[in-house]
Image (cartoon, rainbow, N blue to C red; front, side):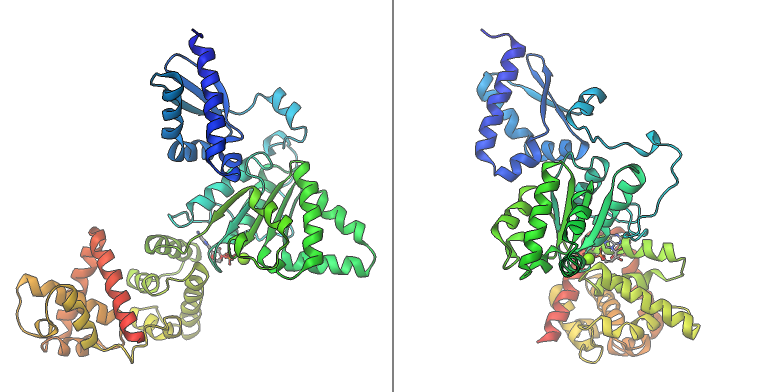
Length: 457
Ligand code: ADP
Ligand code: MG
């Protein structure tokens, strides 16, 4: 019988082969390329992984599979321990002659601001939520080990979701942490323009040298490569040169690579070779966290109910959230008015296309809310005060206040002639409950969606 240790290493190698057969080439390259056998006892296999990001992803995605295979191969229960291990410096220096120097190892350099990067786009300012955590963590991992892990990386997602922010955050972090590395950031449009000009000026080689001599190349908006054959060709050669030299490349696109039309197959396959991560539209919680952070940064006073109003109604992307905030700030500055819920509703009308205060009626809201709670709209308009009716009524008032421009007095009159203080009290009750009851938040989101859909028809 083989000794436990050697048997385990052999079993691991075998398991790795099997996994390679089972997962896609890209998946395998992304998650398993940097994993190494790091020792073991009879019942425990130790693997070293290049960074925490890989460790977390492997644990979540593949650990059970690996353990299952090892159990089959060895006939015993084997647990797997993953640990992040930096290569010993000598080894690292041998393997990667250009191993980046960290800032603290290169003293005496003033902090540079990179000319092509916006200094505001940093990781510190990027709020991570469920919708963007995969992409954000990948970007963070890249910024800590450029060129060694996820290369190339392509971040894709719709407009205003943070692609440029993330890719520039990589650039800013690398510029700060590894002052010796040369970082280039360019949009595809600029890249294409420079390329064309370089041909006109017969300075093609200068252009080539510029992009082939960098350590980190960040190219934004590769979907604009559509139909640009010459630029594609040039980028293809740039890609190969950098890839062969283990230089980090990060691309962004507003759609998955497979959906970019008229992209040469060879460039497509290059983009798909590395890690492809997506940015999704932010969920309500993330929208709120982002907006609150922006408000904090700008040091402006905006009541919570206005933040809620904006985050409920602007669901598309973060740029739209920012636009709404800018508009409110401009208004309050120019007119010298504090930002109240009424001001916000009035000023942001165009941002909430579905809101259309004119089209949504209080009765419409009552019907949908009543149906949702298994009541009739007459119940909500009536006098009954039982709990079964009172709370749904308050929810309907709350929605009416948020979605329409009726005053609280007008709203009260549509709910059995109640006065405006009752409406305000009801809205407050809902707001209080929302803070402690996430299920109510979901219910409210559903109701708003129904009301809007109803209204669009
Ligand atoms: P894209 O390039 O995908 O169109 P941007 O990166 O330009 O989007 O982002 C639009 C705006 O939203 C920028 O001002 C950016 O700073 C901001 N933004 C995007 N995502 C976040 C986030 N997670 N946290 C904070 N701000 C964000
Ligand atoms: Mg962008």
